[in-house]
Amino acid sequence: MIEVFLSASVPLPERNRLYFETADVFLIREAIRALVEAVLPRGRVTFGGHPAITPLMSLYARSAKLDRDRITIYQSDFFRGEMPRENNDFADIRYIERIPGGVAENLALMRERMLQSRNFDAAVLVGGMEGIKDEATMFKQLYPHAKILPLPTTGAAARMEYFEGNYPPAWENEISFASLFRRELLPNPLSE
Amino acid sequence: MSVYSYQVITMGAHDDRLTALKVSVEKRATDLGINPRTIAFVDCITDYDRKLPAIGIYFGNTLRGVPHILDKILEDSIIVAPVVSDKTKVTDEIPSELTHINVIECSASGAGIARLTSLIFETFRLLRKERGVFISYRRKGSQPLADKLYEDLDKRGFDVFIDVRSVPPAVDFQAELWHRMSDVDVIVLIDTPGFREGRWTSAELAQANLLGIQTLHLLWPGQTEDAKYAFSHFVKLQVTDFSGPSPGRGGTITKKAVDQICNLAEELRAKAMALRHAHLVDNFCDAARDLRFNPSVQPERWISVELANKKTLAAVPTIGRPTSDRINTIFESISSINSPDVPIWAVYDSRGLHKDWLTHLKWLDGHLPIRTISVADIPQALKEFVR
Image 1 (cartoon, rainbow over the protein chains, first blue to last red):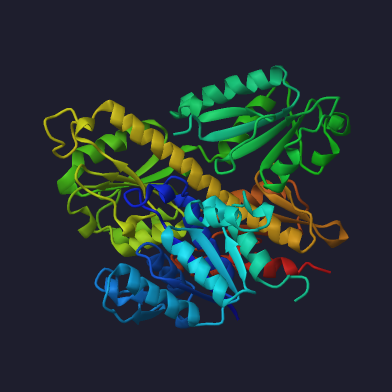
Image 2: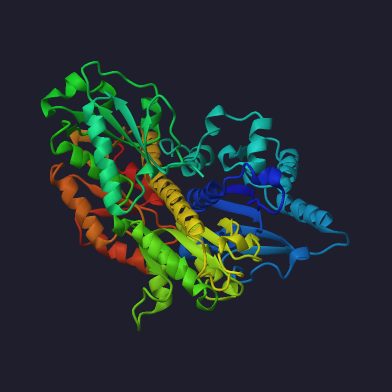
């Protein structure tokens, strides 16, 4: 089973304009919908909880009758109370204890635990803000041989990572995300 | 905001057929209440926007020139209609890159122009029954504004579904909502104080997102963005958008603000439609290419795949719920083109569809000469044809 780490968030206009200006909210959602459809039947997706992404993923898991352990969501107790609890039945939600300090310390601990929780085959970067940069850096250190797929058309931090790194030129304008995931993350259909 | 939402990419001869087509498209749009300026004729020299709906038209000519973007258009699985002066002249007027696609016979004065016009409007799903928009609001907070938007969107050729009043008494509202939602491309939320605690629950929001519907989110003055609604397209209403001393329940909204909201609804609708369509067509074509088939997108919006023994598979992308009357229309149009024993697939996106529908589709499969295939199942289903 393929283990995918998803690093995604949706920049809001009120937060950091730097990320919001290039973010394509619709394509961020398309990318997540495609990941769910192309990868979940054959693999597992692990990510840090997000108030808009978590419900979408768990609804899919529920309607596709997937096993609860196909989606693993990490959540810091620092934000406890802000997250909807109705998703627990359809995803494996792991709460990380709150430690002294602020948002930064608590998020760092959550990321560390999340990234060490499985032996990941690939990371998919979608939209996002500062957090994506941190997660990408940590991921590369832990899994130097794993595949990294930043999706530049979703904009924001994923776009920056694409242009800063050494990635295939064909991804620059790619919006057929399901095809991209199938081709990059799943075995070749003719060799199976 | 972009000036237009729908793109007709013109290639080949730029003669009086093109002029006649432009006149015809403008007239048809006006008849439907759609602003003709939202449909742009894009010359093939300039690039097109992949995130907006597009159709290519190649006007046949004896030079049979190949525009440089044709490869990209075909790779992007965009519908291209090759136009000839006479069906016997395909090889004289159409470049070899397009001869695998069914041609349309058309002169500047004949019935061909009307057919091409219909093709454009059907491709962009601009006929009223396919232009669903849903308005959700809190009666206590914005009834007069909801009514105004209903009227204006209706005038612009949308099929508007509004919270309470479109649901007949005794119909289960929640069930009806889930049902209708899968067929609309845009939802307009009027977010007045208290709206978020009302019946627009997180389950409905998640369903809209899973279906790929665009949310035009009108934030009442004082309301702020919320990460739970991060996939919304936010519009912050200002006190100056209302002509009264305060916004009240929205009855005094200015015409300018209503126009802007309706224009945005059109733009988001076009984007949603383009992405929903691309998901079906691109995925199918890519999955077929990965198995070394050679799929062709036909002007009538179906995809042909050559199988062994000169047989053809016909795949028809259906946005939203594949209903039995939609399937019937598909079947009729393909049967007239194909021989009777070819497989026909209705390709649909199962994400976010109600489970009752998925069960119903399985049942239909057993009773119809057509198979419904969800996007996720395409690669496996196509493999059955690999020799």
